[in-house]
Length: 341
Image 1 (cartoon, rainbow, N blue to C red):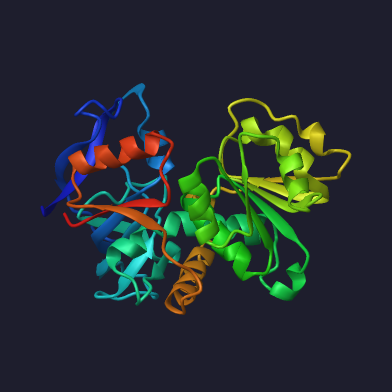
Image 2 (image 1 turned 45 degrees about the horizontal axis):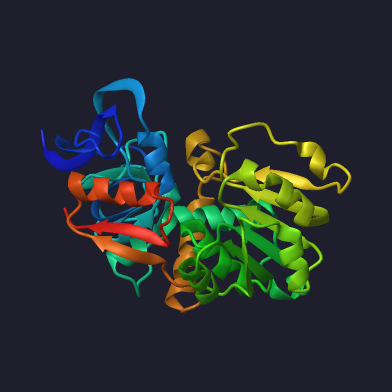
């Protein structure tokens, strides 16, 4: 039996506890079917990691491995694979229903894997998949925004929480397709980050939206993309969206939303969860493969920039605990990446 290094948990504990994430030696997986086995070169940390790891009474009999952003090299492929071969550089987010990528080798279905941008390092590429898939699906699949700039002339989008990982990509994509982009932030540093990634305007998400929008000459926005505290901003988003406009959120509400606020506007509310396709093995699961390949072209042509802000090395329990603590502080900008086992 071949073994490999990994970082995982048996118990769900506060990140200040040294047992919350531990260094492990586990069995190396073998790819079957359409799975590929990837030698992991870099990973990044997302809020979903901290949510899955959050304290609870459950105890795992086998180690739970987190991590849903990987860049690496294909080491072996399953017998039914057609998209990749050993030696290919890849990047992907993986599936929430399987072991995560915080391990020296990782198996993943090739249909949700893309070819890594040739212009990026592994660390730069690892920052991208989960946030980019979320931003892309949220805007183009859920909000049904056209990718043709001519179609979006005069249209606007409000991105709530624009300085985070998803917001940093959504802002760039929205600008690329010709929308007027209004991002929300609350600190000078995060506001500057949002502007640097292409936002036309920045407003404060701790103050009422509509007066701030009117101050910049915007009566209502066509689309709202909520990336932070859905229920906290719900009333403001419903007021800000135009009649027959659309609101998409990626953050589960902790209490019921009053959907009646959108009734008179005939407004649409939709969810985006980037794990849906892999979780349910949907017929269009391969769309994430195509999406990541398209994104790589946009990156290599200089139209989209990676959003990495911190790189830690090596990939081990100590550094992953540090990264989780940074995420849990709620003040991170961009993405935190770890490289090298």
